[in-house]
Image (cartoon, rainbow, N blue to C red; front, top):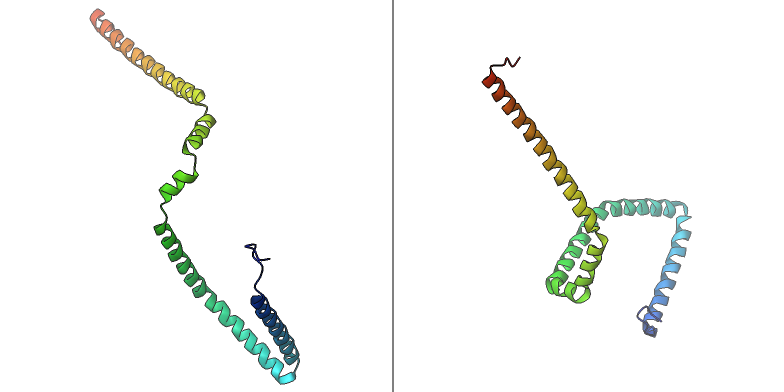
Length: 148
């Protein structure tokens, strides 16, 4: 059976079997030829040259594949209505409720209220001190007191 669950086509299996046999035979012939004195050296040099060419070609091949993949993704995205797909497949209300349940709203409100209260109290104290200094200075001048 194939991955899709359908029975394999016998012609495809025949071709695959022939290809495997040819590849196995070619590998055996290559290994035998590698042992020959003059031919073996030539095959090893050729193999090394091909490996080097493959390494140099790998970068442009990767770039080409990445470019093709990007274009395919863009084409697919152009065909899809992602907003509708999300609406159909995602329970937005359930997701929202789950996010809200995960937030400790009382603690957030308490912390923000505490910090606001502390800031207001600090401002009131500072303004009270300034007012006290201003009144003290006025009274000192009124009574003719030396401020030093």
